Length: 123
Image 1 (cartoon, rainbow, N blue to C red):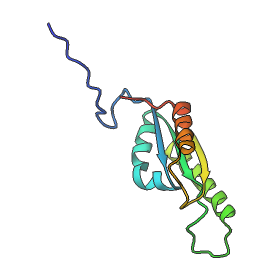
Image 2 (cartoon, rainbow, N blue to C red; image 1 turned 90 degrees about the horizontal axis):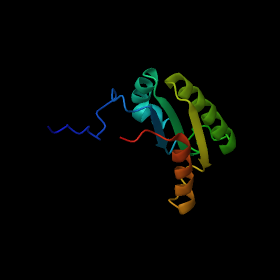
Image 3 (tube, rainbow, N blue to C red; image 1 turned 180 degrees about the horizontal axis):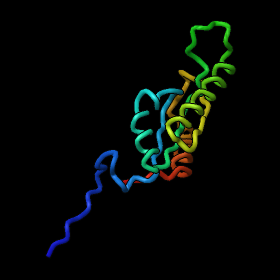
C-alpha cells in the first residue's frame, strides 16, 4: 500500500504548517498596502509574524521643511504602531536611505541575518 506524500506547497492562509512568517519590504507601509490582511489573518491564528524594512523612510513628503531624519523617525513610529495593530512581533529597520538601496553582498548579508533570526516556516 502506497502512503500519499504530504504536499510541500503552501496551501493558503489556513496552512497549519505555517507557524512563523517574515515580511521583507523596501519601504514603510508597503506591508500594510500589499499584505496587511494576510498578516492580520496569520497573527490572529497564532502565527508569529516579523517585519523587515530595508529603507529608512527619509524621503517622500509634501512638507519641504521636514528633515529626512525626522521623517524617518516618524515613519518608524508609524510602522511600529501599524505592526502592533496587525499583530506582528518584531520590526527590524535596516535604515538604508530611500532611493539609494543597492543590491550588494553586504545588503544580502543583512537580509540573511534577519531571515536566520526570524526563522520563518518553510513549506
